[in-house]
Structure formats: C-alpha cells, structure tokens
Length: 301
Image (cartoon, rainbow, N blue to C red):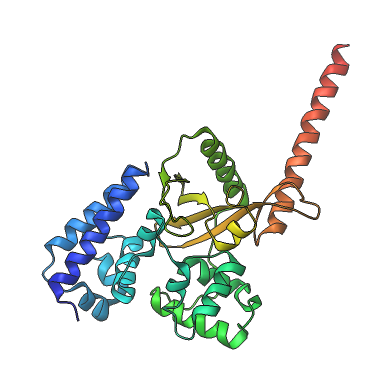
C-alpha cells in the first residue's frame, strides 16, 4: 500500500494538474483556483487522506480548508480507483470501458455495451442511467444486476441511496450550450485537445468548451466514441458534462434527430419528451410574435 506521504502527494499532484489543464482550456478562474487551493491544503496535511475517508467519510474531507464537496469526491475517487476520470477526460485520455470495469460484476463486454448503448462515459452519468431505467435496457442487465450496480456506484461515489433521480439542467440550457459550442467550434475559437482514442496520429482536433450557468459547471465537446466514429457523427454528437457545487454530476448527448416529429432538430438523448415541449413552446412564441407583427401592420395600413 502506498505510504501516507506518497498518497497525499499523488492527490495534490492530480489536483494541480487538473487546475493547469482547466486554465489552459479557459475554464472559469474560480474553478481553477479551487483545485489549486485544495492541492495546497493536501500538501500541508500530516494525516493520510485515506484514513480521514475511512474514519469520517467524504464529510471529513469537506471539513478541511479549501476542499468542497466536488473536490472531496475527486479525492475519494483517487483513493478507490487510483486515478481521476475528470482529468483524463479533459486531456482526452478517458477510457470509459476500463472505468466501468472498476464496478463489481462489470466485465469488458458489458462495459463496452454500456458505453456504446447509453452514450455515457462517467460513473456519475452511469449512476443517473441506473436510476432512471436506461441501464436495464442494456443487453445483459436486468433489474437485479442494475440494483447491484446502483449499490456499487453509491458506495464508490460516497452517496446515500437515492429515492429520486438526480437533478439535471433543463433542455433549454443544454440546447443553448450545444448551439454555442458548435458555433464556436466552426469559428475555430475554442481550445483543442488530442484525444487518445481513435487518434493514432495524436492530432489535436477535438474542440473543448467550459461554461458556467449557475448552479452548473459545464464541459462540452464532440463525441469521440466508437459509435460516433462508425456512424460518422463526430461532428454532430455533442457531449455535455455537468456538475454543481454539491457534486451532483452527469452528462447528456445532443444529436440531430433523424426521424419522427423532431427530425432535423437538435435533441437531448433520453429527454426527447422535454425537447418536444421545448420546440412546441418555441413554435407558440413565434406564432404570437408573427400575430403581433401582422396586427401592427394591419393597424397602420
């Protein structure tokens, strides 16, 4: 087992690296500084962070100066998995299949199926899918296995069992971020990363955007999944990761719908009903504006 000093040093280094990458990618300075402050706190500790976790749980970490709930969750992840998925994602190095295999009972085939069918690549997003019923639709996952995965995720993420699905940003916010990201990507105004997967030349081709829409922090980029490459949708599917100060986190994928009443429109996968209502509201608002224009024109003629 790694010594206390070595483990704390590893945590501090990963936090500093996360701050450096966020700064390079023009993320919110407050978020960058939060990681740096947390790294400074860890540097000054004499006690092993793992002992604090074992004795007091995540709340024991939050009690330390400069460590909020989100970063406490990151430290817990490092203690349990030896790495930090958030950092690997920011670098374009995340391997979702390997991450999912850290869960008991999830082997290579099931991990690949979860990633490809649900379009999720974080444990937080998988937790949401495990609670809203989507996980059970994956071949090889029934109610009993889904319940076991939910319990494993609750333990790994340091959460109490959920009675309701985790909150998530509204589709109006997600679709607005999607529009902004694609516009800025076309204009070439976003930082670029070189994803590790499906990129043998190491080319920096993937635009990344950070944004804040209170209470959420967002990271937005095009999908780099095997399925996106297979269907040639790497310039269409947009993955939006979200997190708030209470460590509620997850992801959604926005795509151009290819069938049904929303064909040709941008849609948040898994939230099609919300998107239909969003576009209905937009159509009604447009009709009211047109009606006011016509009424105004008629009164002046």
